[in-house]
Length: 59
Figure 1 (cartoon, one colour):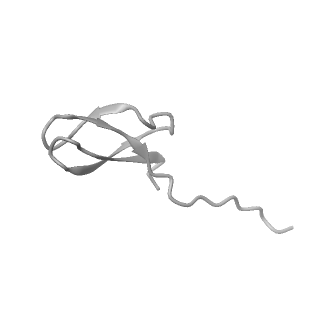
Figure 2 (cartoon, rainbow, N blue to C red; figure 1 turned 120 degrees about the horizontal axis):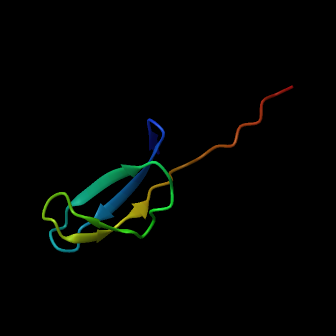
Figure 3 (tube, rainbow, N blue to C red; figure 1 turned 60 degrees about the vertical axis):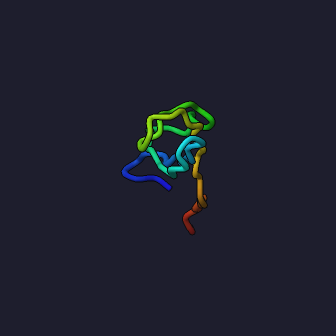
């Protein structure tokens, strides 16, 4: 899922259980460390790619 051209990443905090999401401009942050928005603990980001479609226009 992209919001205004940004890639969605999700996480679940092992410390407090908070499920959060962040957006970045590209898809190179999978498994990167980030800070939980709820408790400040360290979390690991997971790319939420969802479904993507390659569309070929008809001639």
